[in-house]
Figure 1 (tube, rainbow, N blue to C red):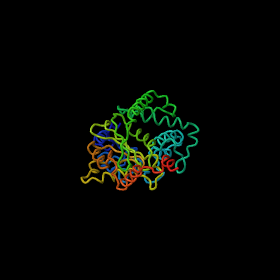
Figure 2 (cartoon, helix red, strand yellow):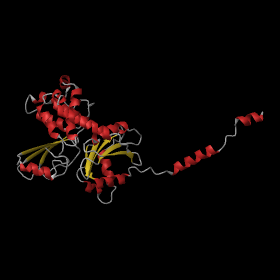
Figure 3 (cartoon, helix red, strand yellow):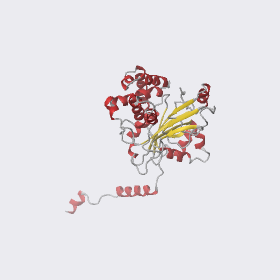
Figure 4 (spheres, rainbow, N blue to C red):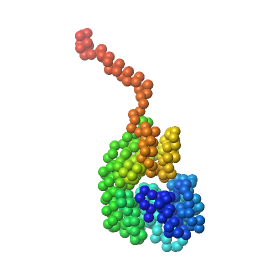
Length: 345
């Protein structure tokens, strides 16, 4: 199990994998960065299935990625499409797992239109509500301060249908813990860049609630200028800021489309001393519509300075002119008053 704050590419995890002397390594959903081989052993074969935007991957690995082929198939859907060809029973028995994973990434309003597989029969057997409830339950343990991934994994292995997950007491307890943590932090007021394009909320939580809060505020904030909502968590890892970005609902139909990854990189490029390089490979990862990163606190604060978060917009000369005109109008007394009218009579 990958440790809290680490990925399969960190030295700790590479050492752990190498110690097992694996013949094969299969990595799901976290392989899309430029990195050395997952282990140094040349005979080990590595397969990476992913859908996060990237053109670079670990060395000596076979890659299956959908990131450049919209509508982008999630990692769970890619896995399902590959595995269902291995045995006739897998297509039906694993369909609900593919639905859980896909809704977990793309949301519960997803339309299962081609080229996605036809899941009508699956949703006749299991309701969409049960699928969506299973998503939140399975996500909860890894979001806790304990990073209790093993609880979700064991529950998934023991399940034969979504109902098995919905009645799992440990999953329910984890979800209650996360709901409480979200409620404690979600009322943090946002600050904005001077142009109003980016809203930033800073929280301090040992739980991984920043993505949930970002999604919630992205649906709540509304303005003509707003494009991106960012939630920065200063308490999840010591000395680091974990942040999540989402496109504001009011900006989702903009043309050209908002690209969070490009926007983050453009902001870092304003630095004259290599801020983007110092942030490392975990900066601006994910999707154009949902991105984030894990960066040193000092580097993140530099990014905030470059974006001028919290600074007021510069006054334009035209604004001053308008205000002067208003004052002139207010200072000029009205000549056609009632008393003047009647005195003339």
